Length: 312
Length: 288
Image (cartoon, rainbow over the protein chains, first blue to last red):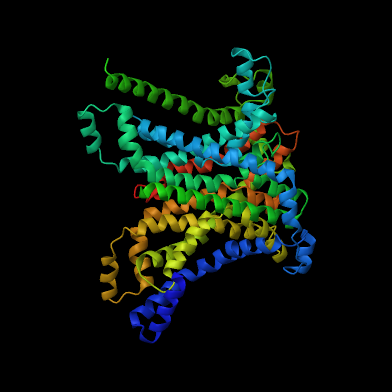
């Protein structure tokens, strides 16, 4: 609606554009046109194309031959909803997303609080904590794989020698353990992201209220619960949003650690398997459209919920 | 002991336990990676728990093997690193060329459609990679860009542009507009103001944004896997490493040496820009 009113205003104003307005329009668009072209070409067109492909029974060869114009069908969608694999992967994705989002934000918050007061070497400690986030996922995933290996991994060697484990645990290959392990890995990799945001927000807090509360005899817990936490709510809301979106469609981490085996096939890995394994482009597209819709609905719900809280 | 004193002590203890435990869990994998890449595989198999090897055990043989080209009986990581560097540098240069003028325009003056543009960048930022992966992959195959470093570079722009615009914008919003206005009165054009005034003022942010883009492109895995799997001579380090790992005969020490080669450039860049990077990424977080 805002677009139409604006364009109407612009249309009405057009004959009376001042030279400087006209120059601004020209400069604005010449500065941003190249990026718009690229974003349209590599993001927006692909999204629309996914939508079209999801209604087609398309293999790679069909797309190469006929381009956009393959016969339309609803079969991909009925397949998505009737396949048990889809519902299983959706459930795994939800569990994975929810637990890593909560886990990484909680840990990041705790660490940000622990690093709040200045001590010698704090800068270095904070820089080190960010390493899992900046390091290439392929490298850290393989180190974890080697460390967790049942035959010669250091963790199993330690467990069987010193912790009295009867036998090595196949952390990435057996069903109940694998999902837990990838969740721990993901929290390890993304708590630094939350830490960065909480640290920035905590530096912005004025300490006066806290000092006043201390004088009044508030305990550290009360200080956290009633003074710090409420002021961090906007950051928590923002981080939750970002982490939910990023994790819901996360591919690399699980693909590299387990390949989707042992009940860890999250949605993105399933889409990849359909695309590459069975080269079923239509099914893969329908699957990602359904995921995008589910994510969109979830996000709308989440934003309603948090906005409702804010206004109270 | 009052509850205030009790909690103060308790939280102080917990705090150091948290810091200590987490330091160990963050550093150990990196330490392990480096150590494993320098010991012979037989030693690792004989005693997995030996995490502090003797000096006489260390060897550079693994690295020689990893870096050497296939012709010399190696794994060709020198070439993978060159490919990764080309793609990451290309994507970064293109991203900055595109994102700096656009961020400048969006933050410095009003023009028709500015608001819709801003909204588009945020929407694109929220769109996950896997959703665009399918058609980008198919489309590039059709266009013949699918199995090339140029195609990969263009695809990476889709990943680096949104976050770059976000970082540049939050910084440029803080530069007073009166500077622009003064220059306008002196007869400078928008392009001149951007080149001569805004870009130098925003230089630190531009550097950190560029480094972040480089990291995204260097670390990226999914697009490389989709685009280049069939072309071993074009593999990036990430892709080359996973292809190696799939071959059963490759030893774990080789894998660790490859991981070190993949990680070192990023950690080095991060070491240079840590401060700017966190500031750029979290800009606006305290405003909520």
